[in-house]
Image (tube, rainbow, N blue to C red; front, side, top):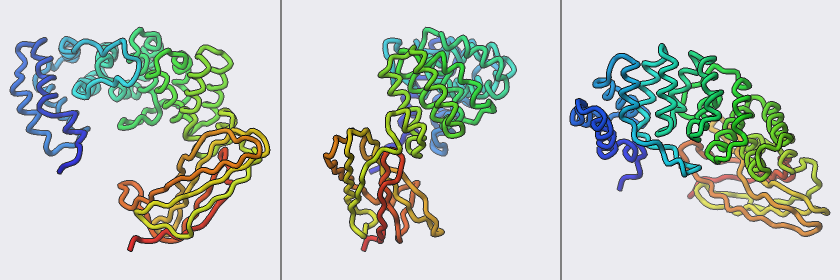
Length: 372
């Protein structure tokens, strides 16, 4: 039995045919059979991103060579915009991603026409990847357009402003912008009524937080003072934007979410002296406070690396409020997964630390053993 293949799910005979049919409807001279044959013949040897580039190659073979004509050709073949009644999780269909590749390849010398095409295509599939080439080569011109896009009636266009300017967008090239430069655009987007947009704003701030935590704190404080976004949504946005800083136990992030790093909480930890790779071990944590105390409880394990050094990995436990003099016992079943593709386990001495509001309150050493 073979496992799920994302590349085959997204790019296959059916999706290629769907794209060919859309283009043929707009351009009767388009050789759909040739396109399908060429595209499918090149899939076997290519991974997901390479398939997108390959599809762009196959489209380029029949598209006009003049960029203005190419942009017209692309726009004429587009399906209707994504459902405007939806407000979240409507990324679009990956089969339209090759249009962005064509625009990025051929449009950097025709910025106005290229950005107009991006504006159209992103309403069918997010053009966050393609727009980054224009932010790199034509930052002022692109940011001027984005200043208008933050007020666009289509929420996919508004989201593109935040997502496209993210400092570390997954699967995408870095852009040369100072991380502070796009923040005025987020000022206009943070009060957006669409969660798809505000989630992107949070992801953007989370990227910024990795290099400039103060800028994120200042922005969230500013937005809270202005009161343009409703309080529950801004609370959610703050938690999401500060998630990396929270995981790192940064006091400023903890305090903004109502967790006092210096809160007086007694913590004990119970777990066996030995744990087995690929088995489950129970980690029991007991907390006690003499007053009502909001707490965010995590634990971190210092894993041994191949060279003997340690690398800490944090695991979430619970967010709750301790009641005065009422012990709270939390039990976490931790599987020491030995075959993880990104994190290999090595036997030896390990340490586990319980953190409350970002501060280590209790630790225990244990031996991690190979399974017999």
